[in-house]
Image 1 (cartoon, rainbow over the protein chains, first blue to last red):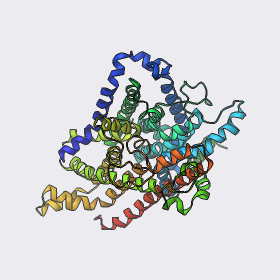
Image 2 (image 1 turned 120 degrees about the vertical axis):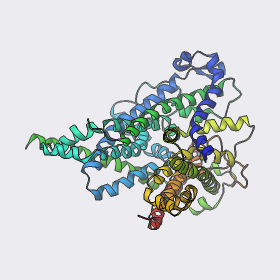
Image 3 (image 1 turned 135 degrees about the vertical axis):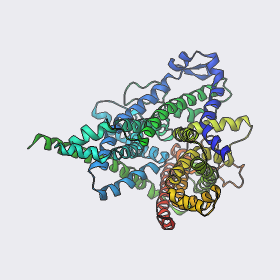
Image 4 (image 1 turned 180 degrees about the horizontal axis):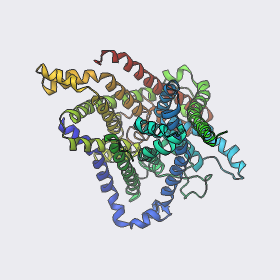
Length: 284
Length: 281
């Protein structure tokens, strides 16, 4: 039992080590600044600039968070504070169901609905022309995919706020919304941030759904209607082929390593905040 | 009207609107996928493997992918279960506080690692062992990927078992191991079941982790060393073809995948309810 437990604890370190080991050939021959900031991606000529892919990932992920965060926050406050328990009992399982839908199905939905919608209605509205396969499509699909994560975690932290401090606020004559705004949200703020970070890191690494709707053009996006090529899509589309090109696999595993490290960093922060909240709820 | 009341109502309206958008998007996903997929659904989709010229619009079905996915996710879940139950029990009963919280953090973080990274790492290991993409490697990858999810879910359940129950068992002279196997795991059974089915759902729905490791084939795998087709990849590949008939089938395959995942999710809820009557309260 000890052995499997330790093994499970070391998986993530093992993966990081394996990726670093495999990415070393390219790290030792190309300066890290060039790898991250150059936008020329020509593997056959030995040029591996990951900048367009990093920007693609950031655009799509940040857009998804901008769309998802306010909606999720309002929804979780509603579910935790306002909704009658019967309504909550219906909506919560539905949102959990949303979490179970496979990412390919989300991607298919994006191709069927979001992409044509953007091409035929949204883009002409602002005078842009696009194929629909764009940052915007990726952001919308991703936003919906992270709803369940952000809502379930932040609803939990909001409900964990002790009842006494709400009562104290009511006793001072505050309305329900004033209590929520000044008391509940303030004391659950770190938890809500943690929930958002968890959503962010999920969106950051999501592969298939995004790959299917963002267009995959290896150029840093310049607008919401431009196509993008995020890091996970780069790995998914190219790894396993063309491994005869020198350093190509090394470059792809470097992008996997970047993904892993970014997600690791955000996850560790979010988890530490959440476990502190769980241990003891500090007021003020 | 009172300004405070106005503000109250404004924000309450905003909250209800966003809840509506969130729930509405769930319906939108369902409605569009089913609406597009259902017309293309027929019996041969789920009873036949792809025949010659299938990807150009000729006859056949995706039985290979359905069976491949069930094999792959089923065996990966079994493998992950064998590992994660001891881990959950160990974390709870034997491990010191510091070690347990470190392992828990590490597992939580691993659960957040994108599945494509698991896929890439396992593919690298597979290549360095000079092996080819097969059902076996798909199982290993998916098992690794769902292990942290399953273990943490079980860990939560095991920690809910009341201490008094364990004390009662110790008082009867049971050892720690006996208590764990006969009391704790029985008490936690409904939750363990939920954890297993949750992990199964994640395993069967994930495409990125098996993209490199399981391969893809038109026949049903007969051994662990055969490549195996999976449903999510079947959806993905068929959607990528230029033939409209094949794209129609991709929609239908998406519906099949959705139905499969949701029925497991509903089944897990029902089973949990059924088994919870054996739980001592």
